[in-house]
Amino acid sequence: MKEVRNIYIVDDDPVQSMMLSDHLSKYSYLNIQTFQSGEECMKKLETEQPQIIFLDYYFDKVGVGAMNGLDILKAIKAKSPQTEVIMWSGQDKIEVAVNTMKYGAFDYIVKSESAFHRSENVIFNIIRKLKLEYNARYYKKLTVIFGVALGLLIIGTLVLYLTGKIAVNPGWM
Image 1 (cartoon, rainbow, N blue to C red):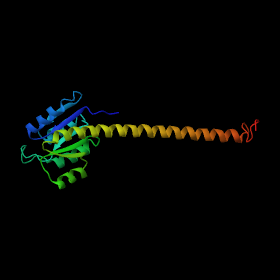
Image 2 (image 1 turned 180 degrees about the vertical axis):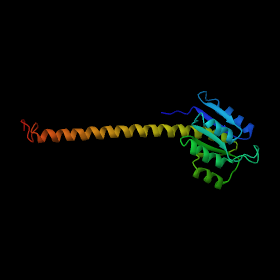
Image 3 (image 1 turned 90 degrees about the horizontal axis):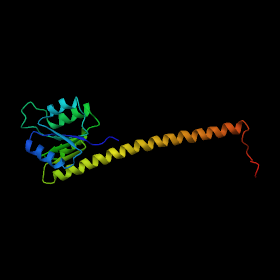
Image 4 (image 1 turned 90 degrees about the vertical axis):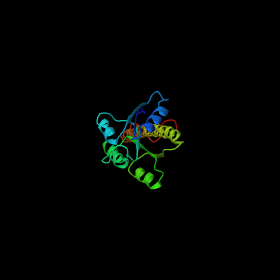
C-alpha cells in the first residue's frame, strides 16, 4: 500500500505556507516542502511525486505572468494523476470550489481559523481512501483466484464424471 509521506505546499504567502507546514509537522512521518509558485512545484514534480499537494488558488504576489491555481491543478493532474491536490484558498466562492473539484481537486479548503484542522481531516481522508483502494484491489484479486479455483474444481469434477472415475451413485447409498 502506498503511504502518504511527501506533501507539497504551494502558496505565494510565506506566512500561510509556514503556518500550515508547522501545523502538519507534528506528524513526524511527513516530509513537507513549500513552494512560492506553481512553476517551482511543477519543476520539482519532474523528479519527485508527492502524494498530496496543498495548492493556493490565486497567486497575486508572484507576478503578473504567474499561472493561477486552476491552471496548475490541470498541469499537476496531467503530469501526476495519482497525486491528490487540495485547493487552499482565501476565496470563499462556491463557483471556485466547484470548478476546482471538476478538474480533479480532492477538496477545497477556505483559509480561515478552522482551515488547519480541516487540512488534517483531509489528509486522514486521503489516507483512508488509499487504504480502501488497496483493500479493493486485494479483494478483487482474491475473488479472481477463488473464481478460477472454483472453475477448475467444476471442470475437474466433470472430467472425472465423464471418464467414469466417479459415479452418480456412490457405493454407500
